[in-house]
Amino acid sequence: MNIELNGIDFRYELDGDLESNAPWLVFSNSLTTDVTMWDHEVAQLKERFRILRYDTRGHGQTGASPGPYSFEMLAKDAVALMDHVGIEKAHFVGLSLGGMTGIRLAIHHADRILSLASCDARSWSPPDYIEAWVGRMALAREKGMEALVEPTIERWFTAPFRADPANAPVLDRVRQMIRETSVDGYTGCAEALRAHDERDGLAGISVPCLFMTGSEDTSTPPECAVEMAEIVPGAECKIVTPASHISNMENPADFDAALFAHLERATA
Image 1: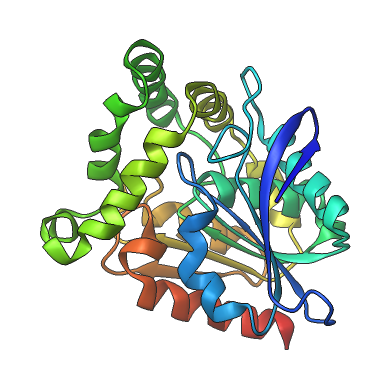
Image 2 (image 1 turned 90 degrees about the vertical axis):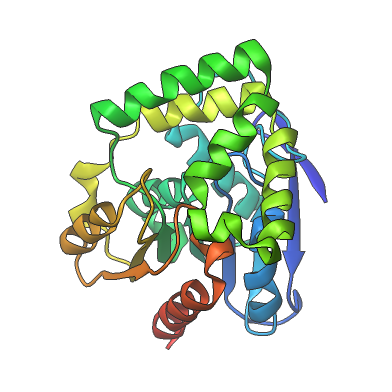
């Protein structure tokens, strides 16, 4: 489905029994992926939740506006989609870019969030993280998204996972999602990541939270999840082992077990 909101055309998907009174669950994708990164989780949760997932601005089948973007903008996009669907409050699950959008929502739109699972994310961007995006954005602008495919796959998945032929379909799916991301969408969201800093608001988050990351994640390493869980009252932390940045696709068994337990607690 598509809808024009906040000046662009958004692709979104709805799953579950939409006529029921089941709680709403919103999924938000990582940088250079789309709604399909959540297929495995949605298949298992659609009997218990009404589910909204969407392609972030500039990703998948959602249009791109000129950058730079900000997490204020990305959070407002999520709220606009919730308004369009008629969702007053929802449990929110995001990974990487989506996880940081979730942090923004839990701080600045707390009245719309029932719980948060922020996965492979961080609360702020230190200097080395900020600098890393400069070269990646330049490469995208000069040579297109194809030039980012293999370097991104190497960062996002552990070497043993990449080496196993059984995992080729997963890796190829992610490669295709990277290729289909617009350069404007990639660089716009990269600018949001470079300017990200929500540290001052963490202690004020009052909804149930799970901070989860891959044990081998170098972009948002385990200490990021541990630090956020220590600051947010009552938050839980899970390190998915083994996994790198796209932990739900590399180790779905451990990821899903932790996510589903979090949602059970949040809906009890």
